[in-house]
Image 1: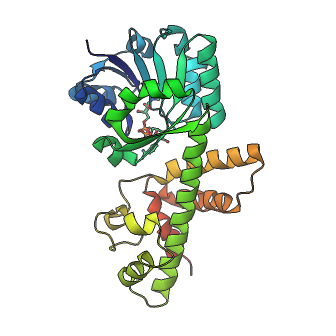
Image 2: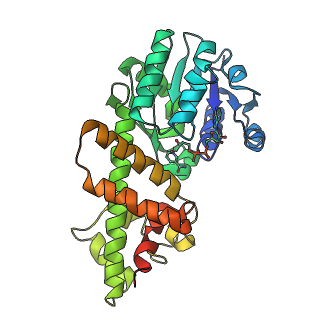
Image 3: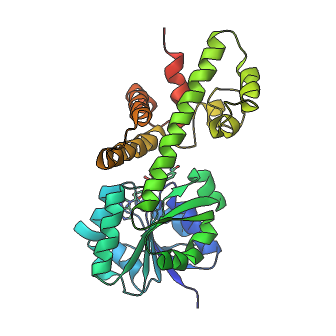
Length: 297
Ligand code: NAD
């Protein structure tokens, strides 16, 4: 008999992830408080549930893809108290990007109730969620992460084990802090070249084969027109929104404060993305940081 997955949070990421689980043969019982999103998921084969409790009933796995730490803690522990309704033999897999301390709390509270829970935040964005090529950065008990593989594999191509509870979230924010810093540096260099008369296509071609080469330059050039398929060439639409990058950089700064780590570039990146957001860029792709450099007199 097909195994059942309760899927909570059918937004930009959750909807295509749930759809891939349906394609892989799971029975997927979905819930999202936004009725339109729930109805749209039904069209891809997800069974509609009218409450989180209804969705976890008889579920072998519970997967959540929620906006932030507060949403996760409210759902499982503080408000909906969903942990009280989840069977002891089911496995909770929270894929949301949240604070490492919130992930640890979820695992701990689940353990108290005899439930196994892991975190599995993702990298790869909406495109990766749709194609089933996400990278999962898992934290928790290694045996539980192995058990999660049958659910994670249809949604992703890389499943990493980072360590104990919280480690997956820490890996995720380290990666995104580096990505932000690298994107900002790339945009800054491109703008200086253009301001000094260089063609951004030529400069990109040179740097991508030189020591400045990096992931943003290779795959996600922030200068409009250099890569026709990149968000920069589509008015910075699609991709990974500035407001989500702000959230991740905020989590990185919280983690740095907690661990007394010195992160001057991460702090600067948080400030620059905050300014971009205040200037109306919060729903644009994060490569729109290029605009900040274009507005200097
Ligand atoms: P989203 O806002 O589109 O989706 C979140 C969904 O959760 C919403 O539809 C919301 O209605 C739903 N929700 C809120 N409370 C709920 C509850 N109690 N029960 C069920 N559903 C509930 O966000 P998203 O872009 O899908 O991102 C989800 C998570 O993935 C975030 O933590 C984000 O940081 C992370 N992430 C996003 C991307 C991306 O490119 N969008 C990339 C990597 C990681």
